[in-house]
Length: 401
Ligand SMILES: [Zn+2]
Image 1 (cartoon, helix red, strand yellow):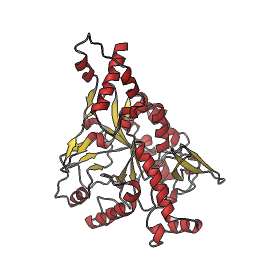
Image 2: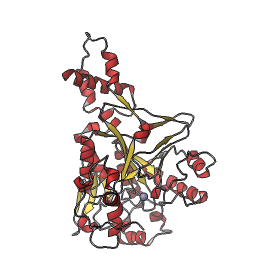
Image 3: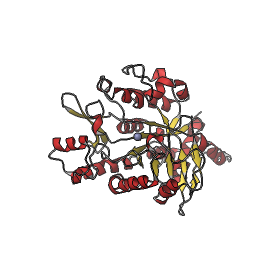
Image 4: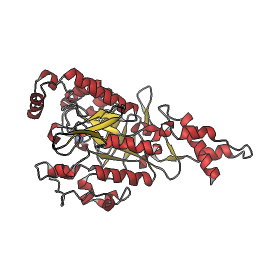
């Protein structure tokens, strides 16, 4: 038993050195240290080959991708009979459900990987399949979260207000209670995963955590960074209301704060994707509309979050069907020309992965109230809904129109 453990440690160490340069599996916290203490006995000439056999290449086409929306921190406020209750109940997940899901996945051997582990972009712009090497029994998955903007419409409904840096420079959620008191804590996915990985570094392959799919029209991460908040032009009612209620609002400072949080997140294993600037349906929109939309993402979101080569389609509305994209697809040709190499839609199957020499594409599964209530059997590879379900949810969950 002891020998196996030691060899496993070497195997991790070997991969750390030879693998992705970003950081070691587990950010080097546990494995890099152990590696130095491990000596392969000289009396075992076969040890070297045995060591490499300890890691197993996981089939890329079987890697699942799960996603969430902003988590509900206080179900009593989200499910208060208000007009958005049905929507929240369908497409959101509560903090308590999320915690249970992550605990179950970790105990089953799931490990977070990045789409950038699944495919690599070459210098000439072509794409090649990646290799995921894990100890036997581990299962890689991709985690993402959509619309982490803390949109105005969610105000007062039991969601965090924004992501902030605490006095230790850690990313936390700011939350406003009903009585107006403000606290910082782990009220949404990013700080919850950060805390979980701190305890379980081997949950994050190469230290990679998740991908946040970001729009721009209400700003990002709870900061009102869109240009409309600066110019005052084309404001929606809730944006105007926000500016009226915050006469002290300083646009440049807002952008600066958002950038600090985004930088801290990226340094800590998070990645950002475009979700289109305006939450556009890319299937239905014209090429011209998508171009204008992407120009806004590049102008007003990329300066805050950084440039990205990933697009996670809003509504899961893809720019093509299941067949491979070709450059005859003018929407694909446009996005590719703007540097997008990773594309995600929504697909209810267990896994759906497509890699060509031009792009990587993956289906994502929603782990929300609707799926858990109506299609528990579709999630049974991941968890039993009965072990996860938050009884604070009203039932039945409303059917989709
Ligand atoms: Zn969305």
